Length: 245
Length: 306
Image (cartoon, rainbow over all chains, first blue to last red):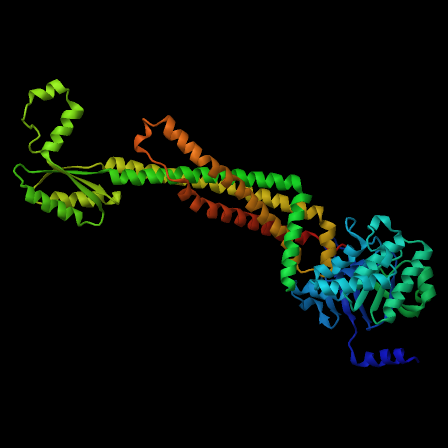
């Protein structure tokens, strides 16, 4: 066992999970049962895939973790905090600990690559001096140093997703949630993004990827949580196929 | 230090918002300017009317006539007693000779006046004219004067004073009602402008929420936008009113000098001394309120968009 893995194993015994759901149920007002009695834990530094067909509850899970919605019942803890106890004005601080990337990148089209990333620091009131240091650093990690002054419309899909990734990571979140990050990308760019996610995870960030991409899940051999109609049906290490069996 | 930088960022974004959303901003500024222009006009009319009433109040007085044979000493005593009263502004003595001279000059033809020779038919018409500083005390003062020994008759002008005060009150109430309605319209329009600004920038706000921006950070640019609209909307009518006031007053005095020879207007500095801070305060207040109320409602509707 490598020194880093050993350290990770040992830290699990003393550190609580970064994400913990206990018997979480979410029913919407229209009668849809999005999640049923879901219990799961994700440890610090893990790389986890969440898979499942449409309507399986993946998006509801992300919304719950961001505290955009509240569960009907059950307890959710993120970064050691019980979400139901968070006050309205603490939600923003809770979200600062979670970086999020989406399938459709969600970049501001009227701002350059640099400005899009700096925006993430600006909104949490990072000092300008720190911003000037951190933004070029993360853009360099993402291989975008040469494209700082370009607008999103001038970039390829893969590059736009890397900008979104830079924006999600520039504030050093504990958790990175990626919702179908390769959904709009060709295979080459998809693999590039996954390589970057793995690199981010290797540096200590907990990565949770919601995806339909069977090929990637199978190839990466990480922990796979499978949801079906709001119920956790499998939680195993291995590929998509393995998880289904 | 960081809060200061955020504050300036908010101001910068607020100014940008006004330009990004220029049609609605222009509509809001125009409405605000129209409201505050009307407010200014009402204020000017009201303050000048009040000024007129006040000067009328000091001009409207009581005339005191004395019993036959009352000596000058007694008249002087009565004058001194009246002057001691707090509600009295000044007391003027008109002798029987002065009264006759005035009457001759204003009511009689020179030929008819000549026939009287040195006789004074108003021999017992020496009087005191009492001017009040508070016209509402006229009744009380009248009762007091009547109780004094040597006083024969008292002419008052309570009717004129009452109707002037009554008119002043009606104008105040009506204009206050109109101004309140106009200001509500302005608040609504600023709300609409902010609301449009929020929906135009829905994606940006949703990303801000997702990244962890505080409510305060999200709101600042819109509040600044509302306040700036209020300030600009107040500055325009103030400038127009300041420039036009002297001209309008000058024109009124020139054209209607025969009618208005007794009417004087407030100097522009005195009007603007009150109008500038009040209008700016209303502009800022309405801008602030309009944006805060709208933001509270609109921002709740925007989700982080998962």
